[in-house]
Length: 469
Image (tube, rainbow, N blue to C red; front, top):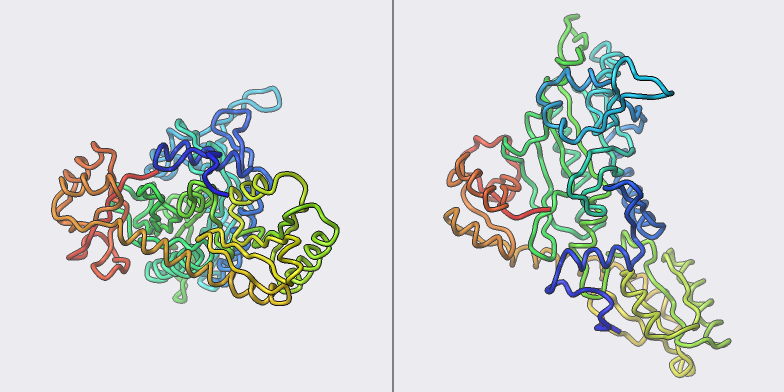
């Protein structure tokens, strides 16, 4: 039941379309303080699915979950000069508590490298304690001047991993492992979002990092969204927080550290990577509801069949819900389309008399007539088909809208409708400044074969250039 003008069309006003989807799919609302966000149950259920999938991958990579304080002494941030300079404009600082002025102001956590570094120094004694692999699920605060729900809010939810290693090579390998085996695997297999993997140019690195790796996804309006990042911190934070270990020769040596994170921005990316003019389009692996059994009308026989189908689908490990036949059928179809449920199973008296139901795919709108006895097996298989088809469609869209160019002028023109790809040695510092004056940035650097380079000095690198969120 598309085309009821419930949402602003993407082609007319993409940002307004995004706001409409977030509101009408009951994903989130603005909080009482500017820049804050209330995540509604449906939006949070999607985030919970993401959390579970990412957390499982993080644990397989050997990291353990912990929790560190929300409040950080301001002096901690000052120990790493580049870090504090990078975050100063975004900090929320508490100067009074308990009715009194604090002896030292405390910062509301913008990220936890500093406080975790303090405790790494306490916990690490010898090489036997390494690598120390930690992760926490938490909220952070970065005061946002131009907030947008999920994409940029003053407070958001995320996971942040922090590790300490004996060697630079080990730290680098682990940051890469997280980037590829946790983030990229999750993005492709669960969110069905293909990304360009690469390193940030020095101007775009995380404050205090020696190298930043990124996953850059293409949204349906052709803009880029940074989906997740992994940072090699060298010995910058180890020096600032005196994170030493005793090596096998009995000598004191500085650790090498990493940090890496992904946030509720992924929910915004999910909306914009797959959504259409009728709302969300959720990949089955992340959808909190994979199938809705929809009664065409409120009828005892139809409702009994809906219950039987729901039971059979639950037994087949499908996340399913029922919609009784109360109210307008068209209105109910529109509501489920806005929420992006992958499959809709329509049960009406006429089809039911023939032992049939109609299964509708949200991604392609294809309708299948299925024997009621075959629904569970058909739906379980079809969900995997939808998942793989959605990834293939997103990758095709990305590739068709990535333009190879030879000059900066061509790049600026190309990014009006997607990404541009050009030789990194054609850009340089002056080129980056020129691009930024056009609201365009170098999203990442890659080797020609698409692999991640060790650093920006490697020969024959390409730059992925785009407008971004």
